[in-house]
Length: 174
Image (cartoon, rainbow, N blue to C red; front, top):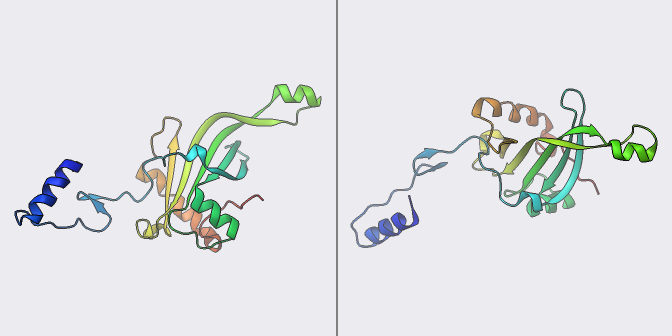
């Protein structure tokens, strides 16, 4: 519904012309809530740095892990479980050697982020994502499109192994 439609329904309800009923919990306009994050959180590139990550093997990636203010405050205070509203972003890039830096060092030792591969999010909402430990998981490709439900099924079982840290693998780098 548009804001104007809500306005008309509200006016009709006040006049006794319309009976309002709330959508079922977890539903907006009778649409079931997705069991995972389907939209990239606004402003994530301005969030603070939590840590960096390197994944070897087939992924061969470097990651920048960022958090919104709620997540940063929880990390700094050691708050577990994380409070609702905490969002953690992981920006992943291919791991490539830096020819420019290696010339300065005189040997191959410097690696930098190459092409981006994906962005992942964890959004804490203990009600909306109760079935997945209170966290919504999101994975977005370089095209900005979210992973589908089948792809996202592997997130919670993997993160569930980190129950002691509220399903979060990342540690705050001080």
